[in-house]
Amino acid sequence: MNPIKIYDGLSKSKVNDLWRGQYLALDQLHQQRSVPHLVVNLNTGERKTVIGLLEGQSLTNETRGPVFYLCGSNQLIRQTAESTGNLGLKVLEYQKIC
Image (cartoon, rainbow, N blue to C red):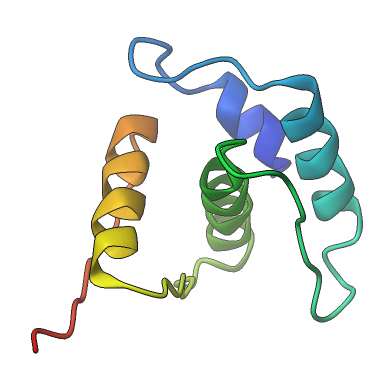
């Protein structure tokens, strides 16, 4: 399923509208999903996390398998899990406690 259609089906109470750059990035990412090692390059604060989560949900819907979303720190794990909840998607959060 196209991730934009997933977004369109979400409850809008906690979800902001996609900006034009996000929409275009998500559309292009989905069209090129068979290309290995794709990178989404947007400025800080342009919600790359939302794009990754929607594409991840699209992959999960298509394959019925899990998606592994790697974050560089425990703070980013918490932030990503919060974004996932705001989108109404399910996530299993794992953090290494030092």
